[in-house]
Amino acid sequence: MSIQPLPDDQPPSEATTAASLHRLTLPGPMLQRGFWLYVWRVQTPKGERLYVGRTGDSSSPHATAPYTRMGQHLGFSKAANSLRRLLTEAGVEPENCHQFELISYGPIFPEIGMTKDQLRADQMLRHIPVRDKVAALEKQLRDALVAAGYSVLNVVHSRKNCDAAQWSAVRDAFTEHFPNLGHFDP
Image 1: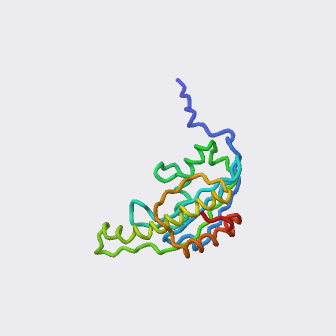
Image 2: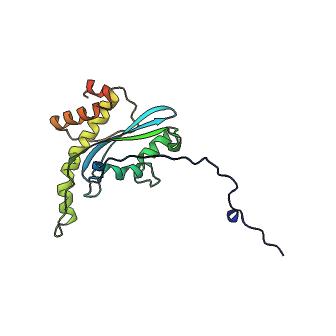
Image 3: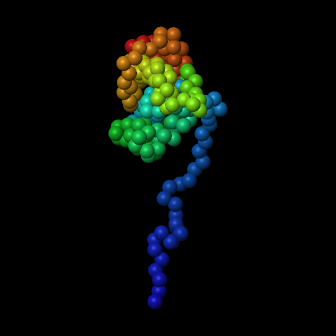
């Protein structure tokens, strides 16, 4: 009687893809928790696509660092991978993209700290107004990028008005990477 090895027991005779070395450089300040705005610039086989986002949860009193969103956006958790989902819906497999660049601005506001005696509901009362201010800036940034001719994958919803001085600072910061942005103000 002979035992036949299962296919999983056999060592791979050749790799299905060629291994290569890649590098990701992360600036230390991107580790700071707080309320940030960011734009993903993705070089896809179909051309450049942008995605506009923010930190500052809608369902919890937390505002994480932008680097945390990197893995979430491109991961497989359906609750957090909106960039992956939107690329796939546009007929682009994220693994086939040439490059992902994350451009972050912040922290615009610090994360609202919680004390030992504070209830979650009290924390949310402090968190929501700040989150709403950043959401208004996120929408303004997304709409301005679209008006400036950039291809943005996502739609941002906010009914709040943004502060003019804060918007000016945001627009000026992102204009460094998106020059057409400086000519449009929705």
